[in-house]
Image (cartoon, rainbow, N blue to C red; front, side, top):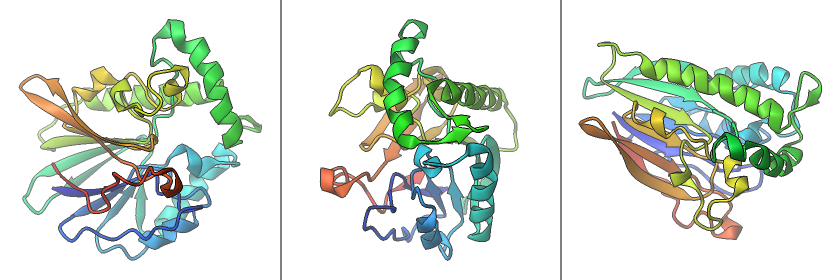
Length: 256
């Protein structure tokens, strides 16, 4: 199956028109498409099915308990399939059955282990203050994000353990990155990196392809596993004024 991948388009501020890749069978949106949600309208008449995993900026200034059902309703009206701790089985033209596992996977702030968690959460407080989201009426701070993140990880781990003849390959779609290997080289590894990357390296080896966004840099690397490799790919566009879109591949298609 051939998947087109887009993420971090930030259409709330960026001037960008996504174009379908002619040889793609499915479009994957890996989050941070438009914090206002208005830009999702551009995918209403997309010529191929569209699967969407939300990013953190989809919740800027919002109450999460209200935003999730509202975003799901919005996506349904546009014929976009929103995945959050959900799996979807799709079939390619070649007959291969692909299991998609989608979750935002928030940050659990343990990129540097339990010892580095407190420092990472303090650094993450800066990004949470910019996000200005709420959960249950309280600020959606680093501690609240960690709770959500661990729930995402538990679900994902349970799904990746499962084996079935119903599918031929597994593709994981998250917004947050699954490894420090995805860190933005402009900034290196620092406590704030844990707000963008999780230490899901062990989980990577249970998938065939892992797609993510969040960091405004393109990544494409492979992680060895028994008898094969898992490819990890980000095609984030980011902000053109900062030069982040230079390596973005608008027509990128991934074979699974």
